[in-house]
Length: 213
Image 1 (cartoon, rainbow, N blue to C red):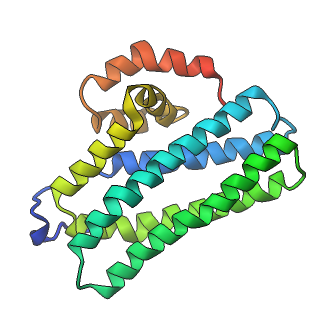
Image 2 (tube, rainbow, N blue to C red; image 1 turned 30 degrees about the horizontal axis):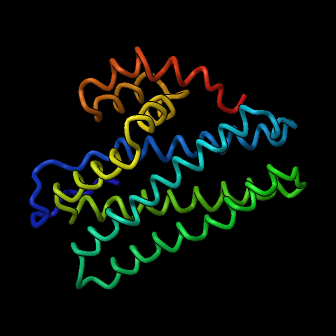
């Protein structure tokens, strides 16, 4: 959905949501890999356990920073718009719906419970519905009303929460399995040195982790 920036956002160029979409797509990819591992009888391999641990960490970072920084900034931008306030409340509520499913899968993996496949399907449905809701409604709203400074603050908070060691996993994790075009677009949205550092350092280290194998 293309939405022109509202004049009161203080912006002349649209916000670049490339990292947001790339992160959402990485979550979708990992849940597909988890589903394949479970149905293929590989849920107890070290690579699958490590892949799941990374997935949950990335999800926690992403949603925590949204809850702490992004949604409050969006609330400040629409204080007198009930429909938009309700949308933001839905975003935080949808985050909370994921917690029991994540806990259930943790327990299923550690105790080899038969409910694992069902919980993975449920998590996939709930998370995908949330991300589609965010992409279809919350991102267009941000494009309309969120000032550049608040979007930059969100990006900065995300980078700070990841830290250097987190970025060393996050960048190649995002790029895992993407097309050449998606890779180019994502790296173009990152600070200049990221592409080189990823090629020389992050990517080789990430491959050695062998997530989901």
